Length: 365
Ligand code: SF4
Image (tube, rainbow, N blue to C red):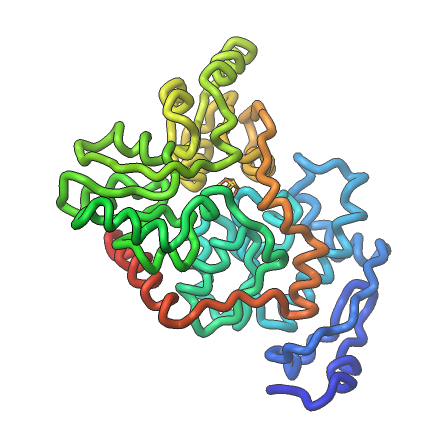
């Protein structure tokens, strides 16, 4: 139901500091709401104590009074808006553990959101992830708290580049990593993730494929298949900074170290690692094998998030952080829910073609 006036909406917003009256009439109401009181009070402390316990291993107590009023306000506002928050594995611990409804890699997040009853999805991740959520959830409102949260991979290629590749290599199918824009997904034959890339490439039944945009993922896939890979030149600005020399130095300094690398890392880094897999596969490795000492060769918040839930494993932490992911903060998530912005909008014809590429991958299982 849509309320007629802003005053009606505001009169329904009369809770305690940091909270909102949960008036169901506001559920689909898109006019901005007034700012909540973000004071650290004994009531806020009491209401958020159980959430602090989730991050206590990786966050000193002195930091919590800055986060807790936002955490409480956001969680109240989610109910009001019938919203869910998706947090990528690279989000900071207070987002990942304290306000997110679903956590995972970008495709896991979009699929989980599709199965939820929420009207609104707030993407705790970068822009291409929000687009993927919209592609798979066309009837839901998808918000991104900062639309300038980009990605060096997604920005390395556009739809015209795909058309030029097709002209250069007629008849060769194009596989796009999910770290691409909706425009690019709409132009390719099928998408892939870092966990299913080999399977996707081999499913096409050809001896050559074009793989975009990550040259390192392409090299790491090429090492596992007989299919010839024609790669684009993109790279993740976070993972390409790791070197084999650095990994070997960590092994020298930390005896017994298990090294787990993301396949967006250069080939030389994967070659000196014990295991390589998507962020979800890296987390599963730590959960199931419980290494005594581990180095996750990926964005640094992921170590914090896995460490927050893990006992008995020591995390060695180089910190290469993604500046784009870090544009998503608690204050920006709060603003996004208050003002219902910034909404992700994709041309329906492009979204339909992009959905076909994503769905073809999902159908592979
Ligand atoms: S970590 Fe790399 S691939 Fe992920 S969003 Fe940042 S730049 Fe893009």
